[in-house]
Image 1 (cartoon, rainbow, N blue to C red):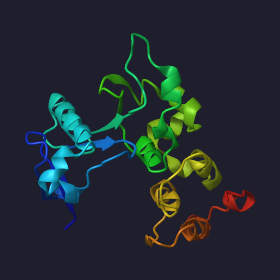
Image 2: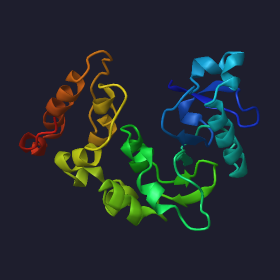
Image 3: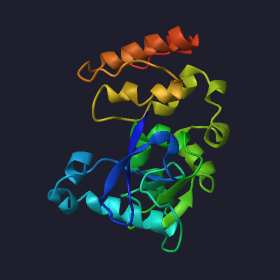
Image 4: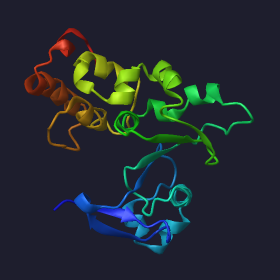
Length: 222
């Protein structure tokens, strides 16, 4: 049985393990890593609720409550917090949205493509749009086509095309530059933290081996 940890918005910090197959509707908070982010272990101690990153969790729980989602986690919706983007005042902050750090982070790529329902929020948790309402602008920023964003038929795109979507993104750990792309390429390979840049080399070898896609052989991604 696959077990996932969910957080109840009614308490803000209470969590429990549930069978992933029967999990209730939940929301996922997509954000970029900053100072004093809260880990699951932190939430097991009184200090966790006093950390700076806990404010994100509380705000996400409040939004989930507004949307009628009982639990903090459930892929009914992705709440994407753009901490470097202001709210509409009164116009949409296009310039800041284009430069949002979220669009430069490796793990955020799958969080953009995979969910059907993505809602974007400014630094003060004001709604600024959705994946669908902002799709033309998101396509301009990321180079990801409307078809890939809307229908997620990633098998229609070559490995080189998918890699181009990640070419300007970064991760804190070298290994994560490869690991964050596994779902995009549909690759199954073990995560070996500590291997450094070798993870990306393994990924490049696994793509043609598992998918018979050789488009990367003609492109230097190093």
